[in-house]
Length: 213
Length: 295
Image 1 (spheres, rainbow over the protein chains, first blue to last red):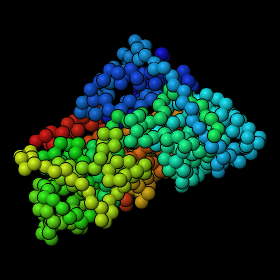
Image 2 (image 1 turned 60 degrees about the vertical axis):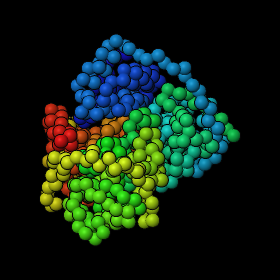
Image 3 (image 1 turned 45 degrees about the vertical axis):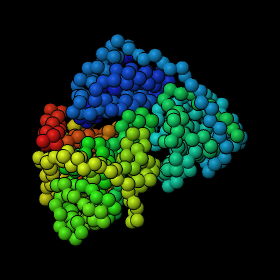
Image 4 (image 1 turned 45 degrees about the horizontal axis):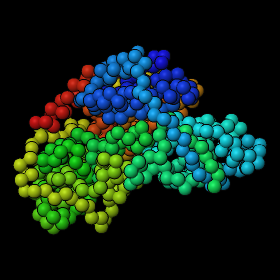
């Protein structure tokens, strides 16, 4: 993979940044690099977080240094060492469509609400990353026609399970929260349950399809 | 009053969107634990600005470090930064706050709430961990681990047991690793006020405004505690432990690990200036603090 730019974000964090685009191949390399790094079990590493086009490594600065970790990462990139990719899962999410912003999205798209729903259900989405809230998956890409930008001012309260759109991304709120995404439906699926054996329903690299119920 | 159960944080799940949380002043948390012979990562209470009155239903050995509060046990003055034996029925009261914003109470054996994803830290926004995922209220009964009598042998004294607090009217100096020279240059000469809209997720800083140079929308990356973000409003945000794991605002600089405890001791209305420092200085400072804790 072409070299990433490695930036120290402080004394306990380095970030490896690739091309500034939202792209499945770039994202796939980030997820693979994160996996390779984790597999090395380097002393002092606390968290390895892949995002759209970057991998951030959080470490204990007493146990490791940015310089030593940068060297390990550069080596990994040079060797194009990539952990075996787990079989991609496709997770099906049931959605009861209808919600406070469905009408607005239909107006934005210039089509009936039924068509918005059909366009939202049509793609197989990629989970690019998790962030913002525990279990919140950023998924893409939404059909351009219904890719309405998020609200200017977030709502104080979005209900847990709400399915939303923010531009090219779609996501599901894993708990009650403030939020600015355009809510077009709700899922009974639980994205995060601390008591579950596998607490997180989705992880980066998964595929997701939505099914109307 | 904002008192929560905290430990050294919920690590290993940021890739799932789980914030680290944990004691904002990690140093004082560790001092208090050391003073009662606890492992550094045991859970204690983080007490913010106004302290509780606590009645102990069992005997306990406790210590309080961090912000200076007038402390009484059964209405008799007791000292900060030392181990105190409490009998069943003993009442520990936090009185007037003299300096700093957050105190840390450790109990020998630790606070015994159920861990979530390996940590007892409280993340209030998502109601995760701690005591039912929230700050303590009057009437709450907080479980303590029972500790055998022999555990008292583990109690240690701690050299350098308190942070050096500067006079209240002065700005706190927080040393940073610069991430973006151009952005930080605008900030370096400014004194910022910690606004009332500040909490464990982040401090909104007034002063400036810092004009970020125009650019396309930034793609979110995972960000660390201590990062100073520059949103379009021009008012910087200093990320603290409960911050969301990812963010799309530019980062100018990040407070060094050694100075995050000082940031944790800032109350709304207090001032801060940021000073660039080198990785070597950041490392040396941290090792100095570790040495003090190990004494």
